[in-house]
Image (cartoon, rainbow, N blue to C red; front, side, top):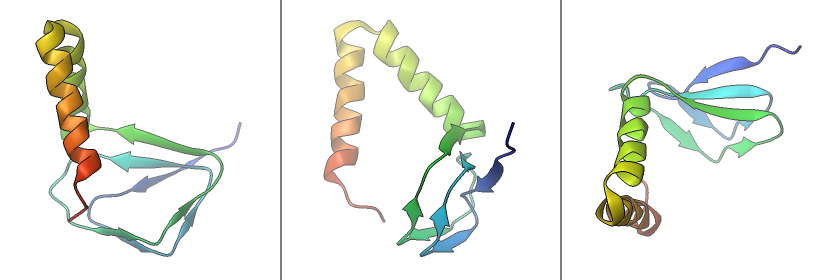
Length: 87
């Protein structure tokens, strides 16, 4: 079994990199960084830890547990993401 490198996104800067066979880690930490002009090849897995994971768990609970209003709210959050540009 191949061992995949963990790439910590927050607090690091990646410019024009090619990522392959690695786990991209998003934690929601207060570390600023940059990801510009990168390419993602085969074998990429994304994982969410810490605050990022808790946020996704809450959105999941909201979507599945708050009825139509919860689903609509989560869909609106994603629509806002689709419309906005990265900072």
